[in-house]
Length: 253
Image (cartoon, rainbow, N blue to C red):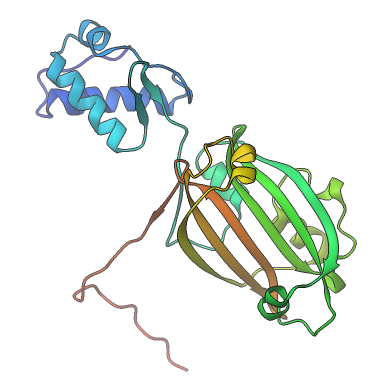
């Protein structure tokens, strides 16, 4: 076990925070692990209770730990961060977090498109859509529910075995030659209803994010997905730039 170096200029609580975070990120303390008590940390690293408490507080604030009154402090499952990023699938985001992406297919059906689906996917009246409802997981932990709609005239051959695991985008590209060129997303805060709470393994009324994505390929709207993401497993981060930030040069026509 690495030790605190009192000869270094960094505060002791910061050094302890770095050491504890390293034990989490290395997998020594996987999600759900109860970490040692403040007293045990003081004894192991030869620091004061104030130092141990500040290091733990910083890890709680950073989303690495959760305090449970009367039970202790536990390693938190990594957060999936949404924000300014490239066009990516859920599976790619999970792999970047060193998590194993997982999918539980809850429903696959071809049905008449409702009014919203017709509008979003720019389909003529009377069209059908393929509806795919999936539970998305990271290392086996429920993270979100997704309901995806695709134009049936393009993807009617999709089968349940195709969607049992893996990335839908990778499947569409591999089998149908579809390349997603653009996607537009909307986020808003919501609460989890009773039926979804049971699937996501949270309490009814737990905070969540509702995410709506409309994706396009070269032919137009291709995928309309609404997701319900657990508020304790998902966060949004944006980079805000001031007026003095350098603007990218415009290319000549």
